[in-house]
Length: 334
Ligand code: SF4
Ligand code: SF4
Ligand code: FES
Image (cartoon, rainbow, N blue to C red; front, side, top):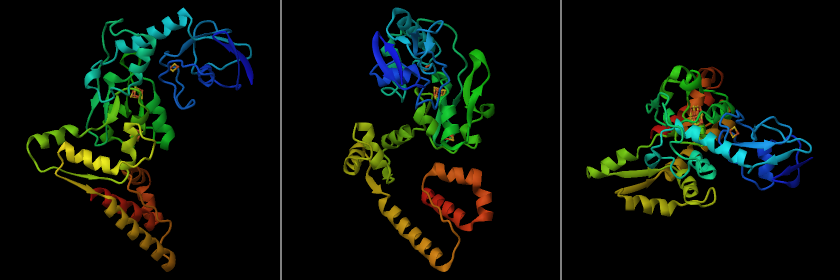
């Protein structure tokens, strides 16, 4: 443990913690953007978390600066407050501020820190870097005009499964985040898992929404039906503040009917039949000596991963492995 002071109050915190972690453990909120998940991303790039700390020459990025015995940290000094506000204003100066139309509105970390720091839009008017938009992939959309170059997506794509699709392209003012050579996600081995989307603090990476197409179908008076996968009813409740995993099946179906869907079908029954089939096949392999292991999944990301990175090897090594994958693919296509 080390003894430190935050805002003049004595605390004991774990040695090795960053100032940001220590402050959080002591009940203080320091605005931050690029840092997340206990050092999974620690580029120290956004400078939104600047504080004063004794022993340092100037302001320090609290997300990467470790605590030390006897350190005194000032989070709310005029100098620190001003520096953090300026950092956010600089980010906003190169940000597409069409917040009203942005799907991230209401969950945007950049807007949150802008409110926390009192940053003003337009404080630094000037040129914007070139925008690159990729809407070709089925699962996700990239819009660099909303990117703050925090690097979270890059780290997550590397750490989640070791693929590392994303990286920084170009240098300086022209830097942007993209798959290698600024290819579309659709032209890269991106498995469409959405891990990068889940950690992006802004609307720069988002799910590929199909809502406009459904609206158009309603407008044209088409007979529109919906079919919900088993996981949706367990995930949807989180968006409305229910504890993680709370099933909202009835509410979901009622909402879809009120939105205008003529029929709402449930994939659960088909999924149950599939599980019975898979169980039967596994028993058969176990008792008759078939190929093992048998692995199946209905996750499109997992299937893409197996197909892109282990497909050929799986065919050669274990027929059973790939049969599982194919089986899962069929389920997706149904
Ligand atoms: S969707 Fe998954 S594989 Fe594709 S870039 Fe994002 S994290 Fe990487
Ligand atoms: S796309 Fe999102 S997560 Fe990736 S660097 Fe830009 S703002 Fe950060
Ligand atoms: S959160 Fe510390 S530099 Fe970005």
